[in-house]
Structure formats: C-alpha cells, structure tokens
Amino acid sequence: MDILITVFFILSVTFPVLHLYHCLPIFREADERSKRNPAIKKWMIEHGHEDEQGLSILIPCYNETGIIETSVQSMTSLPYSELEVIYINDGSTDGTMGYLGRLLELEPCSMTPDGNLTHEEVKGTYRSRLYPRFYVVDKVNGGKADALNAGIEYSQRDITITLDADTILENSALNAVNDTFKDEQVIAAGGMVHVLQTKLNDSSKRLSLKYANMLLRVQVLDFLKAFYISKLSLVRFKALAVISGAFGIFRKQALLDVGGYRNTIGEDIDITLRIHRLIANNKNSRIRFISEAVGYTELPETWRDLTKQRLRWQKAYIDCVIHFSSFFGKTLFSKTVSFFYIFEAFLVGTVASYIMTGIVIFNMIHDPQNTYLNYLFFYMFWIFVFGVVYDLVAIRQAKRYGFTFSLKDGFRLVGAILFDIFIYRFVTMYFVMYGSISFFFNKKWNKVSRTGRKYNQEGTKPAA
Image (cartoon, rainbow, N blue to C red; front, top):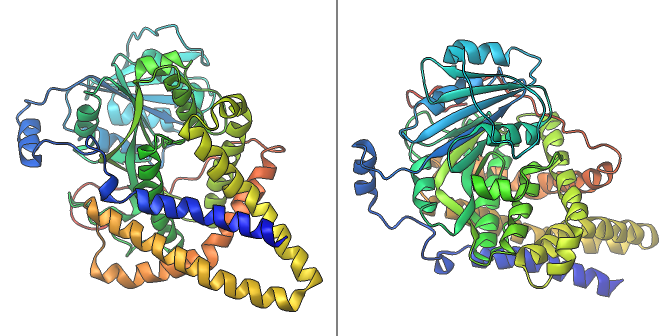
C-alpha cells in the first residue's frame, strides 16, 4: 500500500514540476513570438501594408441572444481586411436568428458548399448589408461539431478560425495569427484565452477582479495556469492535446484531410487529436500556441453552470481515451502527445483520483487516528506548497506576456489562491471522478447559460 501511494505521489508531482520548469523563458523556442518590431507592425496594420492571408472566422450559435451583440461588435471592429465572418445558426429555439437579422441587416445570398463534409440541412444562407464580409448560415440543429462542419463547407478562405459565440478578440489577434501561419509547416494553432468578465473596456492588457465573484477569480487562476504553464509547456513538448474551442486556428485543408469535426461531446479535444494523427504521417507539420493572439471568453458565474462545463470537459477526455485508444497504444512511447495524454491526463489526472481516494477511505476505516493526522499534515504541507507556487508562477507568467492586475487586486488574488488550494481543488476532483463515471450513462452536452451582459468596448470600466 505504501509503495502504491509513493508511486502515485511521485507521478502526481513529476508532471506539474516538469511543466513549471519547462514553461520558463529559457525554454522559449525561436518562433514563439513575432520577431518584428511592435511599433513597425502597428504602423503597417494601420496603413494597410500588412501582407494579409485570407481568414474565415466560424462562430456556431445555439440560443445566443444573451451574447450575440457583443460578438458582432467585436467582429466588426477587427482591423483585418482579408476576413470573412460566418455565424452558423444551429437551429436556435430562441430569437438568435432574428437578432442576427436585425444586427447585420441580412439579405438572402447564394453560397456554394464544397461538398466534402456532411452536416444537417441548411435552410438558408444570408449576407449582411452593413458588413459585406459577414454571413449567416441557418441550419437544422445538429450540435456544435455539425455546425462547424457546415461553416467549413461554406467558408472560402484558406485559414479557419473557430470561436465560441461569447469570445471576443483583441485587435492585434488576427495579425498574430497571420504572422504565425506564414510558416507553411504550421497547420493548427491555439490562441491565448482570458476571462471576459475581467477585461477592462479599454485597450490595456490589465485584468480586473473587482467585479468578479470568488468562483470567477479562481477560474481566472485556472486559465492562467492552463495557458501560461501547461499549454505552453505541452506545445514545446509537441504534446498539446486541446486547442481550446474558444479560439482555435486551422488550415482548412487540414480540417478536410481529417474529415472535419466528429459529433462528440468534446469536439475541441477530438479535432486536436485528429490533427496530431495527421501530423504523425507528415513529420514536417506542427501545432503552435500563439501567445500574442489573445481572446476573451465568458466563464460560468454559478456553481450550477461550472458543474455543467467541467463535467462535460471530463466526459470529453474519457470519450477521446476510448476513441483514440488505438492511436495512443501504437504511439505511446513514440509521440509525446500520446505519452502525456495517457500518463498525465488519464492515469494521474483521472485514475489516480479514484485510487488515492480509495486508499484514504480504507485507512480511515482501519486506522482512523493515524490516518487523520498523517494525511492532514501531508496534504497541508505538499499541496499548499505546490498550490501556492503554481498560482504564483502563473501570475508571473501572465505579467511576462503583458497581462497584469492592479495593486488593489492583490488581496483578491490572495483570497483566490487560498480558495483554490483548500476548497476548489477538492471540487475539481469531484468533477473528474463524477464526470468520468457519468460519461458512460449520460453524454449530453449541457450548454452553459450566458449571463446576458453587454460587454461595451468603450471607456475604462471593467467589462463585467
């Protein structure tokens, strides 16, 4: 028993320490950040001298009246000319389609699909009178993956960007994408994603926790750790397993080569692993993480919605373990993505939760006094140390990339760190354990409710 505990403890510590070390600037690859002078880049963009590639932004919409105005405002303000924006109304039962009609002043237009991917019936295609590069595909409901396949079919540009309806982009995000995809070997990439409720309504990169409740604050820490530590490290290992659905970028041909999106509960993990499987047969292709391409997405503000989201994420992990089991088995020790997915995400991140919980319960029953004392101090020391270090490194990493908090947010961050370590960590363990089991009984998507808040782009007040 002691040997088993020691093995899982070593494994659970090894991967976080590895990522903490590997995310540091000393391991930064030469092509991670743009080599051009930011002032020169800004001048070229403002004066229309940027060598722009064609981009298609696909935004699936299912009952999005609460956020769609924010999305349209964001998309219309982007300073990029070689761009088309396609909203895919996936059988919304609320007023999403009518709302899009009013915001964009839609008129019917003819759009020809490529005929490569299957999807539910398209009822009509429309173009905006106000913004000629904006289109709407109105289709029968088929789920997010189905909506994205329809968008791919009707898109006309070589590079495809997928956004959630509640994602808005910084003005320079598309130019960062443009710079990265000038490298023909890059066939997919993930953008940097921050929490929309913490965004200030000016052009600065400062984040604010003033109007964020504790649940949002701890999710901010979650996102900082996920993007500035884990994803950054995994990309450097060529092992990124999830390109966030909130901001994903792909060459259209690569999406066609892998057969588009699979109708599954976790389409973002699935498409990333499909791309990795494609790369396995093409040694020169690769996936990038574009730290300068920044987007903001709305996060759950209630425990109910957070539970829906995190259970869905865990179900997606289990679904992909099963669906890609053959690929993982054949490449477990030859492809880093397979190694990290199985050993870190599955064995340490999921299986170990059950084993360690079972060991604790067993010892509590057979030797309660000794167990309470030993495990209490064991947790208090190791988890506290690793939890604090991880959170502080994530905050420092964000500052290194230009995202900071005000001094007034210092106490809020301390409170969030303590909440993260002593409460939220146990809650996420519940999400992992319950989500893994419930996958086999309930594969519903469980859409998270939108706040309905209007995120104004003007002024300096926090967006939330």
